[in-house]
Length: 330
Image 1: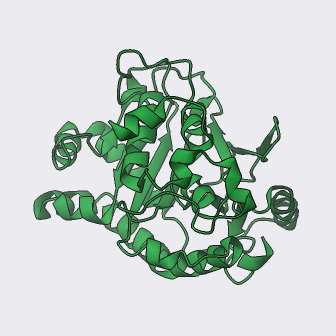
Image 2 (image 1 turned 90 degrees about the vertical axis):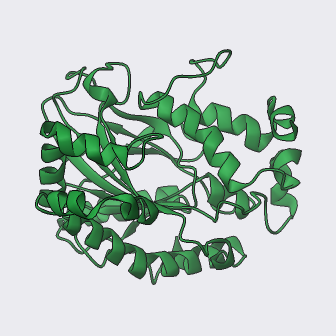
């Protein structure tokens, strides 16, 4: 991803040279779908571990945290009872959700790493979002900054804890493409993240310990296909606890999700997408049904087929194969 040279580089946080060489090879294979980031701060994995350990064992604080966002909760533990879901625990935060946490609860969680986590995400967002958007704008041939004014960002912590309902399952996180513009995945020292090259059927393992920059559906659509959205998954190793931290960046929720510059590359998209009938808020809700089902946090509605994957569902919308015309116009 040459146009991101000022932003994207092999992580400086200590991978051996052979790992750096591997990262460079992967970047060349997947350009422009993935790159490796040299972040301004190291992910605070000791604090992340403490925070998960506390929430998993302190029912009062975990319940109080979920009560701040009662529609879906923040600390999600479906994998503790659902062996067919993604086998991970997650903590979903955002600047708006953090403001809902009471001072007393925040003080309690600060003793278990919350403030270290929030400081890390704030530093990463401030340092990297503007420069990555600038680099992506060059690649896409459009200025993406005006479409990202409201800081539509989310912070996610993932704990691939061995003590879930299916301890031998290797399904840490099922195959999917992120909905937004880009995601930065910070990995601990354990392997597991895998990506699929566009047009390929094989999975490429990503070296652990670094920060990975992936692009999502919104980037693909807004750029008219110049930026590739990359499918990825996490394979779990039996008996191994793996931690990750993810920053998700998406356009403002009222942005019309259509190719900004309509040229020959835009012909691949459905008329629904090219017309701008879908906005980011609606698109996320449609995607969210499938990913929450995959993660065990929501049931599908009557008539929705569980054998249809998250990406297959969205491909019907984006590339024009399905019943979404009626759903949007209704």
